[in-house]
Length: 171
Figure 1 (cartoon, rainbow, N blue to C red):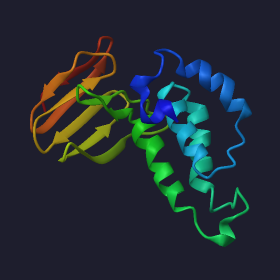
Figure 2 (figure 1 turned 180 degrees about the vertical axis):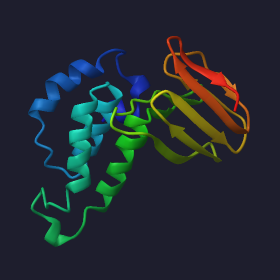
Figure 3 (figure 1 turned 120 degrees about the horizontal axis):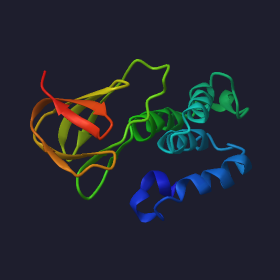
């Protein structure tokens, strides 16, 4: 859970080793567990495993995977479905520098679009396999993947993925 909530407080480069150790030992008995694992698997670039765990999260109550659905729906699991989409596949997380975006879109997805709020400002992020569109209510600082933070103006900004990372393009 530390990797999801406070990733900058973990040892750099240790996520993969921890997933290798804990994933085979995790029974996902908690309704919150699959969503966290899906987010971290996506963040680590293990897209097929992330998709499988995302499906488990989405079907938890529909298939009564925990045997407890008769007692009521797991409302927190619905939030647990949001987390892998935003924190994992979209790769969004707040940092001291601003908003960090490192998408890991599955090859079978045409796009992922999410509305967000960051420091009170509304924004919308649309991620496609090789393009990213960001609409921000007001200027904000964004860092894409491992690039230097940049100031993004209010309005719509378009980016294209190339060998060097995300390059801004004009509409």
